[in-house]
Length: 136
Image (cartoon, rainbow, N blue to C red; front, side, top):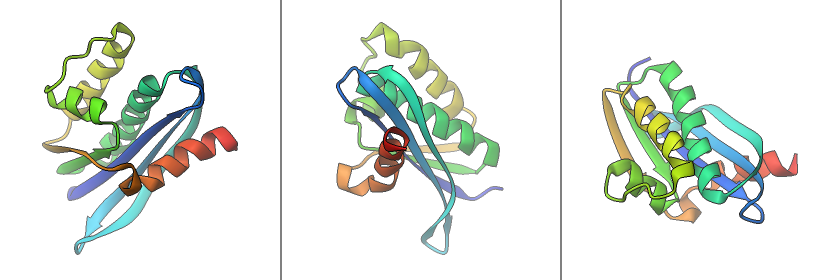
């Protein structure tokens, strides 16, 4: 495929821990516009919000890796997740370590990666997908 793919991800847990869902929305950058090219919306059982956030990233990165873009921009509203993936924060929770390591492995498959923390209001598509999995 080549080009740039922008991936928005979000995890939702109602209860923390509670019923959880994940959402990921993939877009190709074309002429400065984002064109939808894929999505993930899955219920993942009972878990915490942080696990759901990581599961959403892993699912989205797996889908993006199939497209083999030259550049990936990952956007998420979880500051903890983005800063851990950037190496700015340590992963203290042992239950997150395998998910973190899987996400890092997937990120290494892309020639160029940009990790961006975005405000919740800029992540509405992924949020809607995560919540649709729970409401569906």
